[in-house]
Image 1: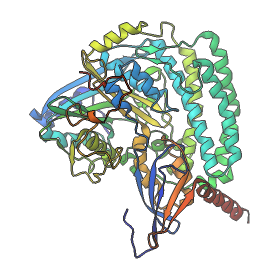
Image 2 (image 1 turned 120 degrees about the vertical axis):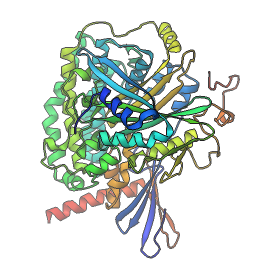
Image 3 (image 1 turned 90 degrees about the horizontal axis):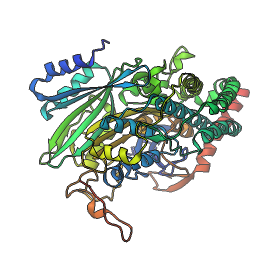
Image 4 (image 1 turned 90 degrees about the vertical axis):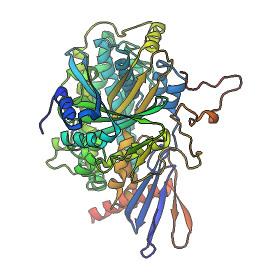
Length: 417
Length: 181
């Protein structure tokens, strides 16, 4: 990182163990006083070679388990995109009922992921009472996920050519009960996140990503939509049960006249998407067609079909953070995949980070970085290097977090006076 | 913006690229109850026409979305597929467009497209380090995922002698399972 010696400019490497998030990544921030003038993103700290395993060790069915473990939170959308790619490559059509079950599970995942993010975001600005509240509210959807799939986190619902568990009529009332709960508290959540003075002060006009930058830097998901790019795979490309529903990509323009592309707009998009997800699940419960849930219930037969199949396919699914893309190529007679390429949404969203952070303040880094909801892994220290004296000091997670909390307090005091 | 049908798009590529368009395929698949169509276009172009093809995609759609570059080791050749989407933002109108280009292993070079699509830089860097394809003119040629101390000349996605075979560790009593073709 180039340091201009004539001005007092410092480089702060944040991470690889990162202050704002739970997963490792390194941001090299060039700062001038409090202002961030340049950012470099360094990734690769948790590269596990999952694609390589799928091409050299596991067969296509075993790969579903790997795809689920690409990410703890997105363990529906990765297998979703993966099985769609394999189904295309091998010419398998999943039954209609399975398409709907896939959508219901994927939307439950979106609700829990967005609520998780809302809690983390509140914590980043030092508003911990909201963090506790939102995470308590999130427990309801976690219980529902456990009720439907048998597990809170890794749901193991997907199989090539369908799903592994049915959602039966008897389960509908319990699902509706949870949805009704969220509908009953949604107004409160909306008021809390959109009208609260503290949240507005820390998020309005912070971490702006302009529409043009979002398009050029390929921003996807809520990050792109908050900047006014109406791109949502559920709306754009028919896949799963979404193809039957009339889904509209959510942008801040739905409640505000102008799209700013700041952190506040990203809150709006995620909040409205929770309401949208509830609606989608309700529609799916209503319209769910009867029938089998698997195209080929016998795993051994399925595996044989896949080994003999030749072809390629591309699966796209809208994850809570944006579009997940899996490309798969099958070669006849080969046990493993011949090519497997995964593109997670954060992969492209990270390229927007320099644009989001530049011109901002250090105290805004946690919330601005968290606002794209990056999906990597956890916490703890940043090193501050004074380029003139070569002094190195460690800025711990706590100190950086305190900087952020102090800013909130300062703004509130200024507002009150 | 005028939206063309997949057939018209393939025709426009034929006009623009001529003989350099090696192959084209339109994939359609009925989805769920209403049987709406998932549509994808697969194009195979020669390397000298690759830049022109990407420029043509930019003419079809301002700011096309480049999802990822996938790469396959085909023995004597390396195949790159640039996965684009166009016509996003419209209900069920989006098209996946896979632009395929094959490079002989004796000359693994491809021009950069970051001047047309700035967000292509991550995936170009990844292709460079994982597959050993040189991206000519890339603005940032550092490694992306691989650590700095990873040996030079080893490319994890290759199945030939430049693959990571010697780096594999296996549990005692197990055999190395590698490139099971």
